[in-house]
Amino acid sequence: MEGGNRSVVSEFVFQGLCASRELQLFLLLPLSALYLLTVVGNLFVVLLILADHHLHSPMYFLLANLSFVDFCLSSVTTPKLTTDLLQENKTISFGGCMIQILGVHFFGGAEMVLLVTMGYDRYVAICKPLHYSSIMDRKKCIWLVLIGWIIGFGHAVSQLIMILGLPFCGSKIVDSFFCDIPLVLKLACMDTDTLGILINADSGVLATTCFVLVMISYAHILLSVFLHSQDAAAKALSTCTSHVIVVVLFFGPCIFIYLWPVSITWVDKFLAVFYTVMTPLLNPAIYTLRNKEIKNASKRLMNKYVISRNTC
Image (cartoon, rainbow, N blue to C red):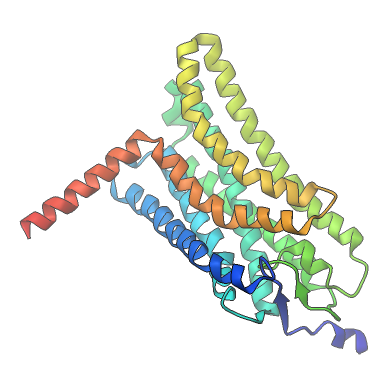
C-alpha cells in the first residue's frame, strides 16, 4: 500500500535554462521570436507545396512532411519553455510531463525515419533517374511516410511504457526545461540503472541507425556521380549539402545526449535547445534558401497575391 502511494506524483518542477532571473527575461524575446519564425516558416513551406502544383513531386511531398514534423516537434516544448521564463515556479503536471515525453520521441523518431526516406529519394533521383517515377510513385511515398510515423509512435510508446511503471518520490525537480527521460528517471525511488541503459539504447540505436543509413545514401550518391563526371559530382554535392547539414544538425545532438556516457548539465541543455528550438527553424531555411523551385513557387504566390490585390 505504501509503495502504491509513493508513485502518485501530481507535478514536476523545472529548473529551466538558467538560475538568473535577469537572463531568463532577456531570453524571452529571442526564444519567442524563434518559435514564431519556426511556426511561420514551416507552415509556409507546407502550404506552399500544397498550393503549387509544380511542387507536387515526391521530394516536395517529403519536404512538406518534414516541415510539419518540425512544427509539431518544436510545439511540444518551446511554448512551455517561453512561458516558464516569466514564471517563478516552473511546474508541469505528471500527465503533461508524460505527454511531453510521448511528443518529443514520437515526432523526433518520425523525423529520423523521414530523413532516411529523403536520403533514399535523393539517391534514386540522382543515381537512377530513368526509374525514379516508377520507384518513387505516389503510393510508395505515402507508405514510406506512414512507416516513419508508425516507427516514431512505436518508439515513443515503448519509452513511455518504461517510465509509467516507475514509482516517484522525494525530489520532483527536473534540471531542464522539459521532461527529458534521463532526468525524469533520476527522480524514481528505485534503481533505474538497467532501465536507463535500455531507454538510452532504444533512442541511441534508432538515431545511430538512421544517421548511418542517411550518410550511406549520400556517400553512394557522391561516389556514383563522381565516377561518371566531376562536373556532375559538383552539382550533386551542391544539391546534397543542404540535406547533409540538416541531418548532422538533427542527429548530432540526439546521438550525443543518448550515447555519451558522461552527462554535463549545461551541455545537455544547450543540445536540447538546439534540436527542439533551433533545428526546426533551420530545416525550412536550409532546404528552401538553396532550392530554386521553392523560390520560384514563392514568387508565383506573391505575384498571384499582388494581382488579386490590384483587381480588387
